[in-house]
Amino acid sequence: MEKVEAIPMSTAAKKQIRVRQTAPKQSTAPFENVRQTSPTTLTFQLSPTHVSYANSLRRAALTLVETVAFRADIDEKGNTADIRFTKNSTPMSNEMFAHRIGLLPVHVSTPLAWKPDEYAFELNVKNESADPLNITAADIRVSKRGATADDPDTMVPSTEFFHPHPISRSTCLLGVLKGRVGKNPAEEVHCTLRATLGNGRENARFIPVSLCAYKYTLDTDEDKRKKVFYSWLESHKKVNTAELEGNPERKGELEREFATMEVARCFLKDEKGEPYSFDFSIESIGVLTPRYIVARALDILQAKLMKYASIDKGDLPPSLTIQPADARMKGFDFMFQGEDHTLGNLLQTWITEDGDTFAGYKVPHPLRDEMLLRIGVEDGLQTTARGVVAAAARGCAEMFRSWRSAWEMVR
Image 1 (cartoon, rainbow, N blue to C red):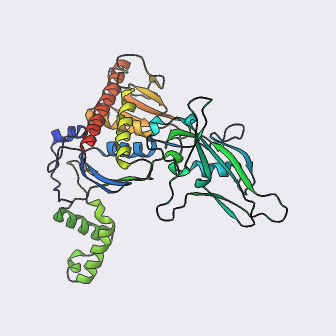
Image 2 (cartoon, rainbow, N blue to C red; image 1 turned 45 degrees about the vertical axis):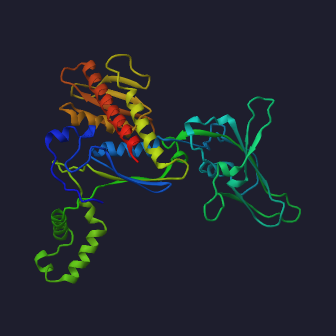
Image 3 (cartoon, rainbow, N blue to C red; image 1 turned 120 degrees about the vertical axis):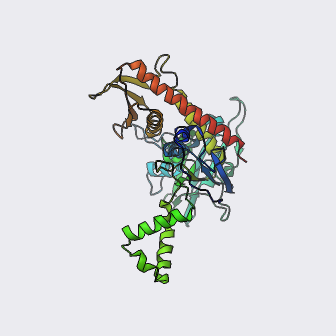
């Protein structure tokens, strides 16, 4: 990677950091050094921006991008949602077997166009032999339903939806049927499946990535690295740096130890000492391309924010209620249903970075799907608080829109 100097950012540049104004020595695009090292792996640098916005992109890729899978949730009657068993003589219960099936990656490259009732999935395996029989995803029979009731169904190769491993050429193991002994009944399993759309926020089976993480971009300035190194020696290793210069072998050992992890503390910082550049790594499970995952995550974030961009001008959306703050300060509590830290941290960061208005959020209870955002207003007017939240939603939405446009230009 090209050496980048961590020149302190001006106050004016820091205020504009959300809308892709760049730090010194950086290009005008928020995405740099984009490299696709394999069909499923992508790395890039996001700079400059606030850590909250970088984390929102990470959370969106993990929990908001849609994929297709088999729901195995158990309803009030003890049935699984998308998986219906008629026979199961394996040692596993229906719920456990359904859970394993629910974790199968279903290869649908255009999930937004998926029609759940267009395809039928069925698993029907019986072991008449004396040897154990593995049940794999390849045993799932797939048929495409006819356009009308009179049209026959068309069989589809199961490998179209359940790709075999590139080396072993086998598909995911679901269970094992024991061999038949004497006149005992043969073990079998029979169930019908329905593939539907969902996201990782609902259940991990819908998460499109096996890796989505970022780290602070390292500062390659040698003087700053030495400063962090010697500070680490004194505070953590309790080493006299003056005596260490006379022991090159010991110094080399400590330098190697420092390079394994502690060097990560020497990262690019703005004038407040906060990180502004982030190195992302994304690895798809193989269903969606990593480039699509990033693009879709940005689209979803923009759409999520636009739901609340006009609350200062009209009626509130059904998912939002407002009431006076339960505190001594003048303000209002905005209760968002179906939202979590992703939206809360976005709005809080934008508002607090924008001026002197108080903003704080929390998820009141982990088992309730809601997020509370408290806005302090000196005049005590709800219209003022609405305007603050709406302006933040519009600003964040515009930021992600510009990121999305920049991502389209990435090659």
